[in-house]
Image 1 (tube, rainbow, N blue to C red):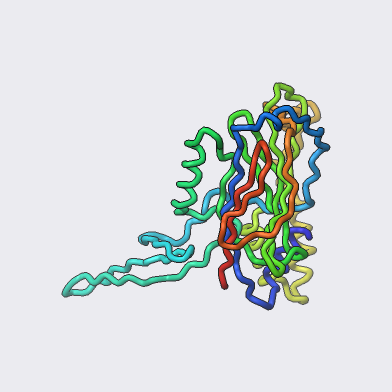
Image 2: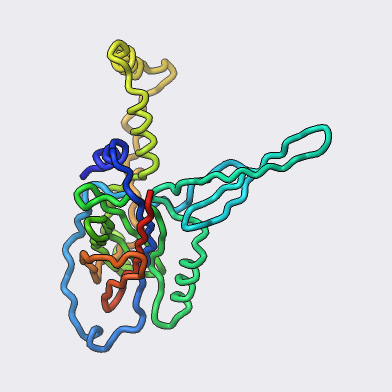
Length: 293
């Protein structure tokens, strides 16, 4: 499924699907068993990403304008708008509670319990957190879902890959994740996925659907706009051939991270509990909660 098809399905869906709240960790195992250290792991082929992948927005969108304060209840935010009403006698303070739906595919703030888990793992002798995020997404079935891109750099390690979390009769996770280690070879290019931002594309496509031109406006909205794009200001100067420096546009990576180990699994998830996907060198810890819309 392409990104446009996924967004269109989300916009046009007739049923109100429930939401899934995901808490997702990838953990490096520092204590390796002797037998695992002796094992020769197979060489991995080049990673082939899915055509389109969603990226999780790391910085949460500002929820509402100030002045407000936020409280968290049952994983949702309650915003308390404070209005000061002026009158000749006294100032009256009025609080209005507004229920705010979480934005999808972006980091959930105020996750103190998850941050505590992350800190405890990082303080231990045996583990380091390579990646952590929490987000909301629709509870679509596998055919209507799309993978999520995962990537993180920690010291000399690179974690990357893609996961898909979906709901059939039960909730499932399908993941392909790789762990690599930094190499001094800087002439090779790390695999880069084609990602998109869900909220940005949703807003763009929702706007396009609402502002679709009427048939009578066809010529104005298409032909004339295209003609205007072809008109250049007289002050515009086309650069000469010797002024075009194409080499400066190429960003060469500082380091290359060859793939060492891979997790490639699809399992059923026990909802509301932490589920563990094990590997001798790195592991996945994932919790999925279903929330009625």
